[in-house]
Image 1 (cartoon, rainbow, N blue to C red):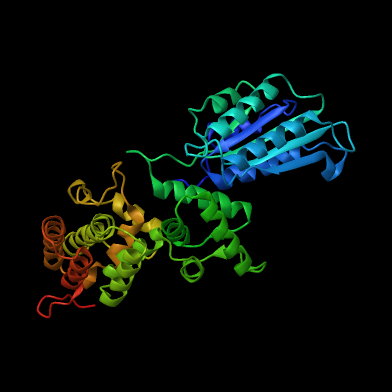
Image 2 (image 1 turned 90 degrees about the vertical axis):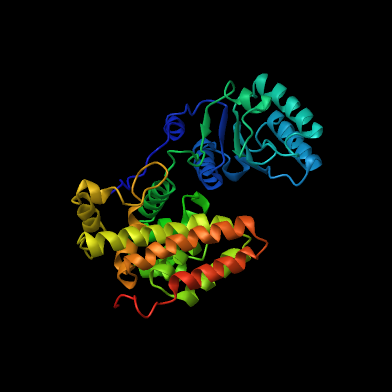
Length: 393
C-alpha cells in the first residue's frame, strides 16, 4: 500500500530554514491554499515584536484590472519608504498577488512599468527595520520581475504536483489528505482515506475545506473519519461523481448510473471523455475482477490492506490482467470495489460490454447521433440484466 506519510517538497524545506533576517521574503506557487497558509505563518514570524498590528501593513494585492494593480504597487512603494507608525520596525505584506501570472493583466504595460519601479526600490535596499513579504499566486516564472526575486531574498515555491506520465493523482491525494487530517488530530477509518482521495483529489484548498467540515461534524468525541461520513458530507465534485458512476455501474444500478452521467454532462463534461475516463475503465476493472474471482478463485477479504496482500499472492499470469494506470502501477482501490461487485455479472456479459464500449466509441466519432444519448444507451446495454445469463446476486 502506498505510504500516506506527507512529503515535504524541497521548496518547503528551504522555507523552513530561510534566514529570518532577510529584509525580503517571497512565497509563490500555483497551490493557492498552501501559498496562503505558508505566507500567514511567515507573516507571524516576521512581524516586529513591538508595535502590534500597527507594525504590520497588509496590502490586498488581488487586482481587478491593470489600473488597480498599478495602484497597489505604488501603494506598496510608498509604504516601503515610510518608517513604522509606533515602532522602528515594520512589515509590509503584499498579499495574494495575482498580477504576476501569465494573463492579460500580468502582461499589461501599466503593470510592467509599475513593477519596474518596485524593482528599483527593492534592488536599492529597504530602509533599516523594514521588511517585505510577497505572497504570489500562480506566477509566470518567465517574467523578468519574478526571476529577479531570487536575488533579493529567499523564495519558497509551493506548486501542486505536476502532471505527467509518472504523476499519481491518487497518491498525491492520499498524501494531502493524511497531512491535513494529522494537523486537525483526525484519522481516517477503514476505506475512508481512499474514498476521500477519490472524491476530493489533491487540491489543497479543497482538501482543507472538506477536512474542516468533517472536523466540525465529528466534534471532540469522535476523531475517526468513516467512509459513511465522507458519503454524507463531501460534495459531489467531478472526481466524486466519476467515482460514484463507476460504483453505481458495478452495483448494476442503471438509474443511479444514469443520474451520475446526467450530472457530469450537465457540468459540461465531454461525452467521449466520460467514455474513456469512467465507463470503459469500470468495465475493464469489472471484467478483470470477474475473471480473477470466477475463474482464478481470487478471494476478496473484507479489508482493503488484506486485499492488497491477496493480489500480491496471485500467480504471474493472473497479475498480468490486473488493471493498470498510465505509470504501470495498480489502480488498487477501485479494483477492490469492483471485485466486491463483479459477482453481479458474468465474464461473458462483461466481454460483451467491452464490445459495446467500442461500438459506442465508433458511433460517437463517426455518426451524427447525439453523444449523450449514445452513452445512455450504452449504460442500458451494459447494465440491463440478461435473464438467461445473469449471475445470482
